[in-house]
Length: 224
Image (cartoon, rainbow, N blue to C red; front, side, top):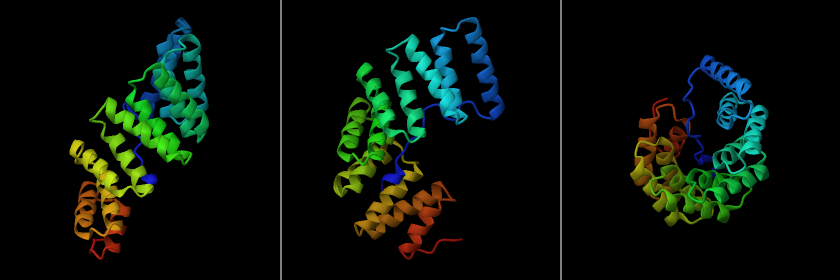
């Protein structure tokens, strides 16, 4: 169901090990000593703090960015994501909405706004935002996947299948989508197709315990 929403941040992992993260913090702090109003440095520093899991520091940097540049859609988006990490869903929604007001074609903000609405149990609002995300960017496999998860949760199985299949057409090596689709097919009684997708999920991610469990539930032998 909804627990399988995709929410990877763009740029995650780009900095690699912690040493590089600390170096980046030092670099941006030095830049801000020279020019305290350097908005990009505040924004980048916020992103690095998020990478470290230091949400309070990240939020402070994004807020500073927005003081200097009130129409920075990316800063609003990042601020929303930091609040979402802190489980402050109302705050997250407000900032994602501001991001899409500033930039109506901001597909990623639409996707995350959908995720935040799911956190509030507002499924129709979530679906509307995922639909907007894929209208803007038809190849956005993550938003197709997320929309499918929510459609499945509210019992719109045929529409969910359509969105899962589109997500896989765009990104066929996504173990999570194969698993989610396999689980839905199993619930719908399509055992053979379910097994095919669950097996593929396990092939792509051999330590996928949920896929192993689901296959065993379908009486498929799976090595320990």
